Image 1 (cartoon, rainbow, N blue to C red):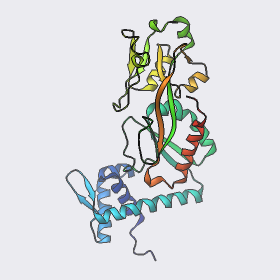
Image 2: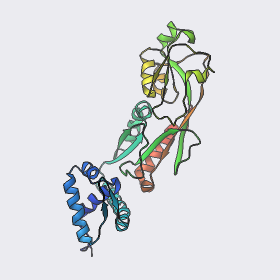
Image 3: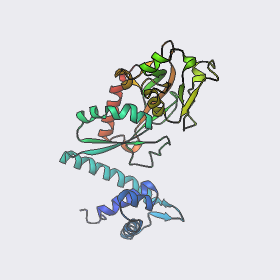
Image 4: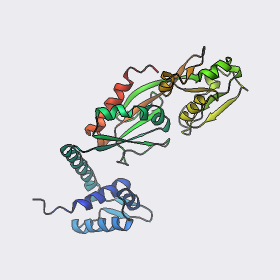
Length: 292
């Protein structure tokens, strides 16, 4: 019945090359040589009697026949993988792409909760400030983005809107009681499309000339505050654990200000993936009653 089908391994190699639009990148993902990938693709094209890729100088592009096969190949491999994991009760992997600060300060400390509830799902966290092309890179199962609350995105679900506050250690607060005498620490985003949140803004420019330090990662600001270096202007969400443990306290008489939002996006190729839905539902439950 299936005697006319090509070998499964050639379909797997084709899927990687089609997703990544590169034989070299596919080879890296599959841990084989680019030559081996090229050979498998050529063999598959010979079997099917048609070209699947247009070879260009530094890239490859899918032909019309290649596009058709790519869509079916990925869905088939995904379904096969899901069923095998279910049958064998083996651990499956879920890759989440998010910012380094959210991963380090909120997500990773809580992943043990998710693992206890879902022991067969291994969560891999991929961090970076660049915007991953998650529709192209199908190794990414779910994206947690940070930005304006009104930012539009397909299949976006808002997780939480943060507030920004001033935090320092109890010892620093004991020694420095006036904000004018403090070292103030803030974030200058690497991602310049994000609106800035600075000490000058939240104090209406009343602290010009005062000692202000900058980091390009919010978790660096938190770490500097934890080290007793000053008062960090940071998301209340990201310092939850530090405040609960008594490591950081709010600087008195300093009002909180509106921050940005975190939201999740499930790529179109994963909208039916049960483990991804389960993880997104867990995120929403964890953040549902969060007063940040």
